[in-house]
Every structure is written in C-alpha cells, then in structure tokens.
Amino acid sequence: MNFGSSKKGIKEYALKGIASLTGMAILLCTGCTLGGSNFTTVDKDIKTDYHAVIVASDNTDDNSNIKEPTNGGDDKDNQTDIADNGNNTDNQTDIPDNGNDNADKGNNEEKVLTPGGFLCMDNCGFEINNSKSFANRAQGVYKIVSDGRIEEYIEFYNLNDNLYAFYSGNGYGAMEFFTDDNEGFSSETANSMRVKILSFTALTNDAEYISDGKPAIMDMTFTEDGIEFTNYDKSSGDTLFAPAEVKLEKVTGEMGYLDGFAYMDDEYSAELLCEDLDIETTDIPEEILGSWILLGDIESGIVFEFTEDGYVQAYLKNKDTEVSFIRGTYTVGKEKVNGGTDIFMDVVYLGIGEGYPFNFCYKTEGDSLVLVAGNPEYGEDVAWEGAMFIPYQMSSIPRQYLD
Image 1 (cartoon, rainbow, N blue to C red):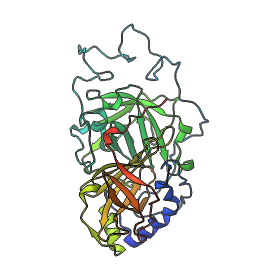
Image 2: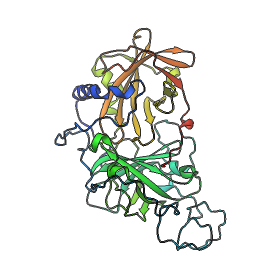
Image 3: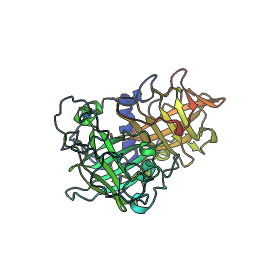
C-alpha cells in the first residue's frame, strides 16, 4: 500500500472539487443532514490517479428489506444453538473458567489487549476522551492478512466511544459498529465484542446501507497483532470485505493516507489550494480551536472540531441514516471579508472518497461564531442568514445503538 501517493495537479483538483460543490451545498444548509446525498452520478468508468476507483462490493447480494434478526429474541448477542448452562456467562460456549470472577463481559483474556501492542497516538490532534476504551484501542490502520487476493486495509476511528471504519480494497466504503451492551465500546477491559456492522459505499443507491440496512453480525476480538472477526452469522447482512471472517494486522503507518480517505495528504491541503488560487493565508486564530455544533441542534446539527495543527473533522449521526464523518485540512484567510475571518477547508467524506474544498466566514459574538458571506473564489460560500457555530464538546456526542 502506498500511503499518500496522490499526484494530481492542484488546479485540476481544485476545479473538480469546486464543481462537485454544486451537489454538496446541502452539506451545510439549514436543517439538513450529510447522509443520504445523491452520489450515484459518479461515473464508474472514470479512473483517477489520486485515489482508488470506486466499485461496488462484490459480495453484496439482493437481500430484500428484512428487519434486523432477533434469533428468537432471547439471545442478546444473536448467537444460536447455545445451551442454557444455568450461569450468567453471557451466552458463550466452550470457554474455560480462568478463575477471574471480575473479568469483563466478553473478555476471555486476563490481560487487556491493545492490537499491535500500541495505541494510535497520532490522531491529528483530535480529542480523545478515554484512551483505554475498546474503541480507542481499536483505532488505527490495519491490513487484512487472511485473504491475499487483493491488498485490503481498514482504518478504525473512535468518536467518543462510537466506532467507525473506512475500508480500502475492493473499492472503498464505510462501516459503522454497534453493540447491544450499554457499556459497549467504552469498556476499558473487554477484548472481544459481539458486534453489528452497517456498511455503505459511494455506489449504493444514494450511498445507502448495503444489504438493505441489514447488519452483519460477528465477533470482533483483539489479538496481540491486530483484530479478528469470527463467528459470522450467515443469516445476517453483508460486509465490505470477503470472506466475512478475517484477520487484521495493525500497521505502524500514520492514519489518513489510505486510498480514498487521504485526509492527511499534504499535496492537497487547504493551504496549497489557497496558494494556487492566490488567496493569502495567516496563522490560525485561537478562537476557532476546539469543537462546535452548527445551529446547536444535536439531532440534526453537524459537530465540527478544529485542531491547532490545521486539521478539521465533522460528524453527524442521525437515527437510521448513514453516518456523516469528514476529515481534512483547514487554513485561515489573511484578508477580512465583510468584517469576518474566512476559514478555507479541504475535506474528504468517509466512504465516498471525494475531496471538497469550501469555506465559511465568521464574526465572534460572545462564545459563538456568527457566519457572514465569505470569499467566493474558494468554492461555494456556505453561509446563510442566522447560521452560527455554538461551542460544543466532542465528549457530548451520544453513544449510538441499533434498535
């Protein structure tokens, strides 16, 4: 895998991204969500030299709309043929008693494992609330080593102990992970979880979930070297990778360079895009650093985080809608526009693989940022009357569960 191997010209890329914004204006419009946008116009035959070609997953079938399987309703982890042995061992079989009465549910190892033996500390400066959680121990870059047909990678992300992933291999797409347990991915001791995985790609209808939204169900277990997915429920939904039961090996490379989600590729940073468009930039002002929510509505508002190193991420997850997670770079215009400070971004959409440069311009009002019209030269102005960013903590992002 060649991390960060983009070679496309800045002007060509900028024009491509700016043109794409016509259909991306919904990203920051009043009351909108990022999920469900129509990306089906992507030409499957177009090949580029700066990311992998988007193709549909080869193991997606034509499942009809089937509700999430309950397997009789008594089995919380959706496992079948498990006898009731009269104890409270969370429906697991053939697991020897190791004498550890304080073992965390689903944790078959006395030792708390971190895949690869190290935490992913290079998180682009984004906030990490609990470094010991299952979600944060999972975070990082992995290579699928159980299937040598094609080169496949998975990158895991932790957002306040919600777990998401990007798949780059046979095309690319996004995965959302869920547990039934209330503690779930916040556990500091569990090495194994029964998980439900929802996946989507750019070329499914309106970027909707594969398998008609039916989750794939399997065990996700940490090993010394990486992660294993086992005990796949064959009656459940599809995965982006095949076969469904795989071994992952943690990679020591930095996050953010996989084909299709190369948000750390400096060759296409917001700074260079501004330079190519002759827009002068300046140092990042302290007031923009931290986390914000657009309009302050947690149900439909988009949460942004800006780091001191010039990285930005945005997150939105509404019920029954594909997660919206974008990462990229940002810079600040030197010239004041309408009395405001212009923020220029170049971001990539998880699972979609396209880069979008856009900007917003703000004036400070107390602790909030009120948007005003910005520089029209850099893509599309996303400001609208009355819009503002309100201070928000990433630690306030709700934990997500499937009904």
